[in-house]
Image (cartoon, rainbow, N blue to C red; front, top):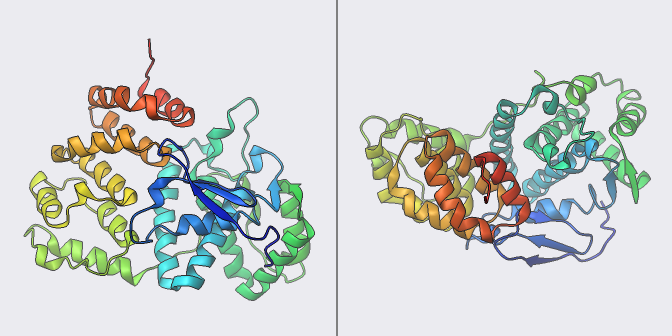
Length: 351
């Protein structure tokens, strides 16, 4: 697709910036947490560039239609990463995204699991979950698989060209989808279920990754023998580390976590994605060796994506007092977007 806005610059904002990125037509605001030292978190840059089409060129009419912005953008992000690094790389991102979607399904009410939201008299922030991002992306991926990539790409190009510099709601998109793609090509898919019903439809695309299968096999081999020789992460990407950490059983012992930590220095990781996943797993497994590094992380980082799961893990693991102790130190450095969320999560009041 032709880029409408020309060159796009990126400015890295202070740590208090609460989001991963904020797209603007010519200048993207980005969190410093994307800087890992090895260019391993560039998918966020692809995501914000993708907003040049979904978000900045064609914009959702209301917050109820937020998925039209973010679902498309995640889909394009993964297509960009596939083009740059190959299908295996994009598949790893998709599986991690599906894991995030499952988590959101577990956390959100049934009404908020639909793509089309009902936010009347509610804060728009309620809809900024992985339902919009990941369920939206998998919906589009499902249509791609049903129609074929070539046909779907042609549809997408025409969609953005015909709606450029306009807003659109979900019903208008569905009508366009039916008129321009599904009906002419006799493609039958469950659009209404995906958009208006809760949960994940049964025809959600299934993504597999040989990279992740290898990670799972190594973790299983580590097993009860605590044999680190079975784990060979020399070529692992950030995504493989995330899958490794997420796949650790909840009943892992402190000894097992200590062995892994001592060898791979996860508590000291400078990659915020890996550090957050490790800290959350450690909190839920009661691995207290992370405590001081966890506090430093929560004081230093203001990105809500990382704050919310860590404070929630502390609260749900009967460490609410420790969560509030850290939060009182960190809160003055947080943006209101983050502090508002964590205030509600912890039941915190400055008084």
